[in-house]
Image 1 (cartoon, rainbow, N blue to C red):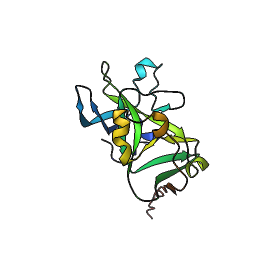
Image 2: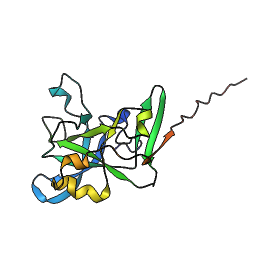
Image 3: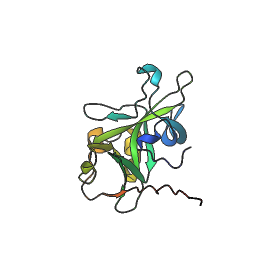
Image 4: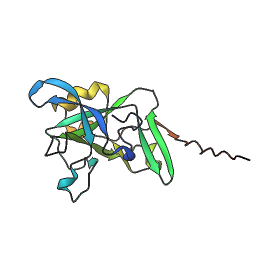
Length: 172
């Protein structure tokens, strides 16, 4: 697993991450498995899609959660990280897909309109599932319209990710 990439860093697309889901062979069991981020490109003109907009859609099966402590934002040449103001981790709502051919189990992240802190950098971000909502999401016990919503203001802190300048040495 690529530990340097966050689940919502587009540079991490195609990387393997841990997801939490109901075991398809035993619905009473919740399991954590490794899955590839992005859909099978064989079925979409060679493109792997990492995100699904939630508007107008229902997610009645194959729900999963992606544990996260932050997500990354790219804005032009700059890169930022968004993390909870209170320091808590959270989950990103996702949908997993079974393996097909040589493509392993994969997942896509569901997106909502960005909250007030993030909207200054990009229009959307992953749908946040709070720890207290985990079973509601996995068990379909609460309507999607109540869970897949834009988070409130003052939830995230945004920090620029500064890259270290390349050091060059000159020999005389």
